[in-house]
Length: 265
Image 1 (spheres, rainbow, N blue to C red):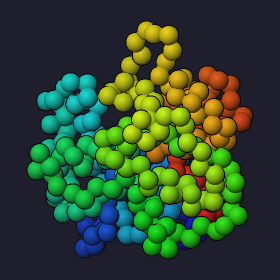
Image 2 (image 1 turned 180 degrees about the horizontal axis):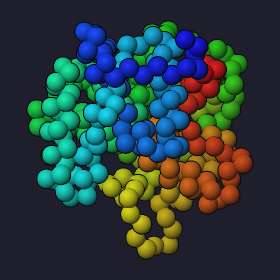
Image 3 (image 1 turned 90 degrees about the vertical axis):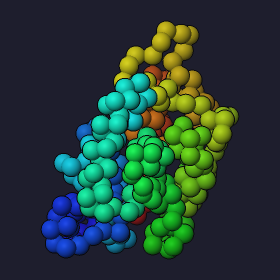
């Protein structure tokens, strides 16, 4: 199989063959259905295939974690979705989950245990950092991103909710890029404006939309790339870049896409 071919086994297939993967890749709704974020899913899968990680997805058996329902105040719907997912995960005896969505990451890691779902849950930024640290991803010095200015936008559910700040930055630094920080970053990072189910509604009236304010901070760094680790942040930051008519100069990309490009995947 060439590095650009995508091999995605499902838990059902592996179970039928009597196998069990090292890790379940929880794709998430955006990674499954959003045209832009499906590219991130493909990039991450190519990386997993390249390094030989034993993984599988749930495929049609995966449904929403219930995060948007709970943030929007529909606790009944959240618990229905969560219990249904836990039954599927436990049915396959899943122990370890990796996901590229901080909203899924937070819900699976911190909120499912109260309903009986206990798993080791890892965000893909941490997983990528581990692969780099273990030498399973070997990025060459002087690669495609050498000296390129990249700024990282902290996702609320990855950063402030789960204290994951360094892994994304270590991934960027491994690209031999120049990491430039926004004025507000890490614990003081500004939301993109999509959290708390705000992704699915128009913003309240005000002087300026939150994603425009955040995009202005990113553009002020002079970075050619705004790196993100969240599908909602990607949409909001990309919309902000379009609002500023900077699509030709500044790109918004996920960490997995940067690694995949560096590896020629």
